[in-house]
Length: 150
Image 1 (tube, rainbow, N blue to C red):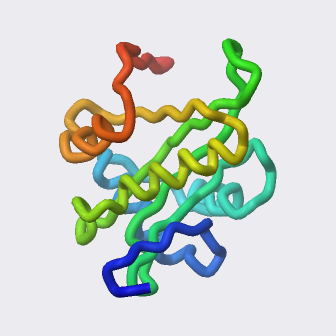
Image 2: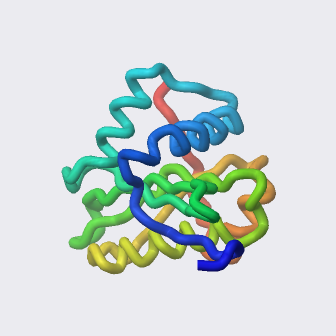
């Protein structure tokens, strides 16, 4: 692999320190944080083999994690097959604009196809302009508005 190539692969237990740094940066972007027990729980779920848990793919460049995506499969009342929810996507600021985000999304698409879950969806905030430029190229914006329990 040349120094400009990006490898996409599943998260490994030895990736924890770099994954944690990237996830902290991602959470900081959204002006939030999580307690230590959530880091531990999330990591265990990402590394586990329960089909109801999240999966994680990481982007690696020159031996260093430069991005990740967390996603899961779930049932859908309008479909027989499962649906894939891409919950988190993050690329380190050093590699933004180099195709890392696209490669991670395409890897989730491939995982969804392999799992016979052709529908993949995700959310973002309206101010996430840079990411939305990518999302407009690899996805289709829907008219849905999200609500949360107060």
